[in-house]
Image 1 (cartoon, one colour):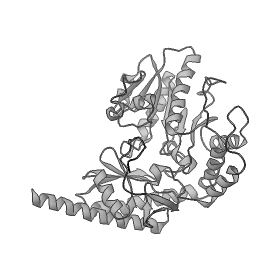
Image 2 (cartoon, rainbow, N blue to C red; image 1 turned 120 degrees about the vertical axis):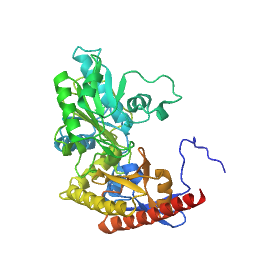
Image 3 (tube, rainbow, N blue to C red; image 1 turned 135 degrees about the vertical axis):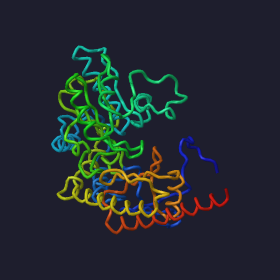
Image 4 (cartoon, helix red, strand yellow; image 1 turned 180 degrees about the horizontal axis):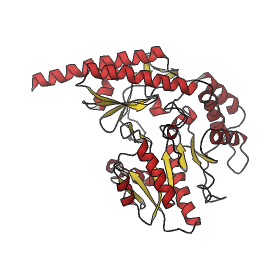
Length: 399
């Protein structure tokens, strides 16, 4: 039977019907260890009891009213996010792309109301991924996402992440903001050097630019801090968050200083579904867990343990694994074999992983994994390495 869904996904031949913690179960009853977490979305694992309770409690009361009325759960969530970060204000949306669109509009509008309507361009960086809308594919600048969709949306300039002199050379009198991921996710789990981010902060302050951090993938505990900018020692003016914020429910946020958000007044920007009571209740439940004492410290501990174990795996299989990257439980294996092929080998051993750019495999488990589940995943990756080595040897023998 042919599918009636637009074929934009090359789906694996797997159908899951339930999940619990770090595990997914297929319709045939086979269990898979989930080190993809819906691409860093299922931050607290599948069917976390606190999230299920929040979903059912709020779902039985009220799902949606629109932003024409007060949203107490949204007010509470915004207050918690601002108290735990650099930000003063929050705009809620549904996806990372929407949060990034809000950030871009916020930066341009701030320049406009300050008397600089000519400042609308945003400097971005090669290898970035900021979403799938027309503006955010232009911001990302990757040809494979731009092809066939007409002229690239005007206002975005990409340069390699090289040095700060190159950044200054790329800026023009029309530049409004700089947009960057502290760790590129889709681009291969490539961490931006802290000195580079600190330099962007200095340049932005000196030239009156808005500095935007895309933390759609790195945020909400993924790196062992609530947000990755905390590792660097500088804060942005605007930050976007999504993925793990709802633990599997569509929620996104654009956080900003009061100064950065000055241009967004009533009617200037909006959303139908963003900030609805159901989403806000679930996101508050996620923060209940993530902000609990010791939770983020344990994520950081697990991240260090994982990198140690994976470094040993890389030493044992140098023809397969070139490098281990990342921070916290956002880990990348730079491979010497195609990451899609390696992900299929891991899947054969019932371990789910996510291919990425720069020939990298992403390991993005729930932040709630146990030490024994980490050991289990490493053992399955060891088996996938053995299988990959056998395939290399067979190809060499046949050549």
